[in-house]
Image (tube, rainbow, N blue to C red; front, side, top):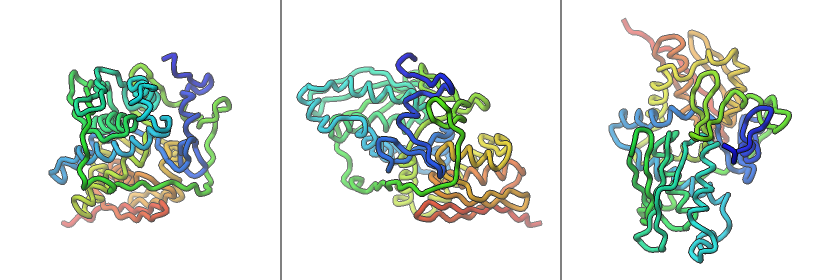
Length: 360
């Protein structure tokens, strides 16, 4: 669409290469606040991953997903809003709909879906509501939470949220004033990012400065989605601070078996063939691909029939990475495996995948 200018050389929206920085250690950060890290990665695995976790533990988790993402998105939206925005809206110096339209428009180049205004009431009492639609959401609970977090950021007050699928692939989401349970307040913590020097050099577009490999993707602004030109997989720009806290909250609520549940759910989905090492020519290309996605810096990767070993610095979404690598190994060799990993506080991920011993 005309409101999003794309680089004439690589075709990537200028807003992406303006708002985000690709660093030399496999990290992407927000240019406005380099303490906040983001990822550009496949997103069609998100809802299957959440459903897979639910199937394994036989417990719904959508409320945890929505609450975690709502809180992170409320903070994220604050980067784009003026100070004391709630008072300015209350005094009618700023228009609530115009502000939310501006935030919703940012969803299109990020690949998370296409939002549209439906209806609202804003009298600053308990009868208020704000309803939008979203088509082709990258993740249903995450898009629901994003709308709720945006309205909270603008109005400065807690909201509840309800949603329903109106037509296939199109959901209506309504945020309304509602206090959050005391037990949830203050529980979620965010880790601020600090850059460490790395050794990754990504080829850059000479015009916009973004990674030249981004030209392999196509932005469909009218639909709010991003697709790979070669695999047709869908991509999105997201914050690991939206996803990793979900797993930490689940672990606090349900116990220390959750990390292995997440890994197993991701392994099962990956083994269906969604990811594959064959997508990359060699280990160096695989390393560059993960770095372009902002997932970290692979320092060692050995894959043999006898096992897989990987060491990665600055890793984020580490449980999903562990499950992904185990699933890739299982799918490539058509076998089942076991996995062990260690993840340090400074973001170093080490994992080993081994074929299961068959007892006869």
